Image (cartoon, rainbow, N blue to C red; front, side):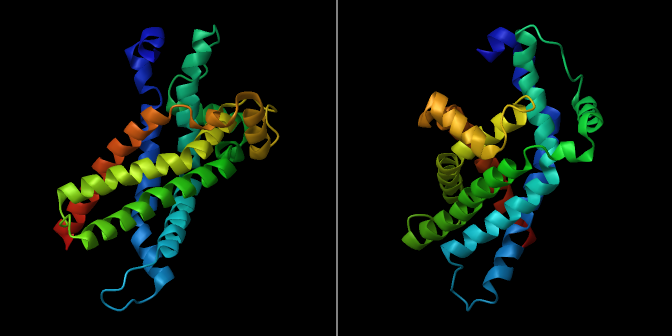
Length: 238
């Protein structure tokens, strides 16, 4: 439908800020996870693994740190993706490219404007990061303990897909909330709770799971690439 209405290039709206976001956010949330987890657990005896709450806390902390730094790139990605629908409705092209979007957002409200939606963004990304990284860590621990898998590519793919599905189930409501707050005209929502209540009242609970299928496909695919790459890098540097 997007391709038919807006053309093939519309499928890549927001690609540049999306890459900027992944470079900053993914680098921080993934790179800091093990050091932060080890800081939380302290030295552990050989053969003893961190607990699930410790893994979740570490992942929520690194998700918060990562998106706090990367929020401007996420905001610009959402704005660039959202302007296609506005153009279809007869509206003007607001942004020529990502740098133009950064500049206009800055001129409209100063540096703080680039952190619009920070609250729901932190909520969304800390939760999804916990569901993704902590669940991958836990699924891998359980898979290896079961004896069904060895520590190799099939195990990593299985755990990555399982973590992606878990992250979508847990994170879709806050994902929808974050996107609506970032794309909303000024004054439409007084705060994230107001956005949640308006959406629930007007569209019902399942509005928070719109796009669930494509989101599972996207996140599972991303997780397979990310965790396979991470495991191979860890193996090469061991």
